Length: 182
Image (tube, rainbow, N blue to C red; front, side, top):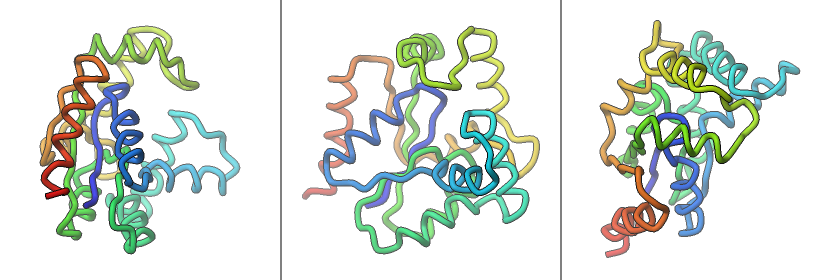
């Protein structure tokens, strides 16, 4: 089974990836392709450059390029989780595999802001206004090379609400794998 993850910043996608890895999945990310591109360009890796690099790659090679690269380079991996799916074209490229399912991880803006402040990752916004502005810019793409989180989320096969604690999330994830084990 291949799972792809989409969701807004600090919704809990990385926690879901970590849990799936602990349960036998191999993890990768659409952002890994962008990171390699930025390194080859000699550019610093931070949120703004990741967004810009993704737009550049999509503009040059089509809106599905990041997912196509991952799909092709991981074709022999049986259980894979792909983080950072941000466009409908990426979802469609991955759906060429019949075992692909898109998961949207949702959490309220307030919960995500609190998590973001707690984790204090490099590149995370440090004020509410910047957090909201960054999020709004990622929701709807101006063209095919931009991020389109709303349109991508609309394609989700599975939605996980992650406004609670880690135990509640773990219980939801156990249900996610139960059918695959029977």
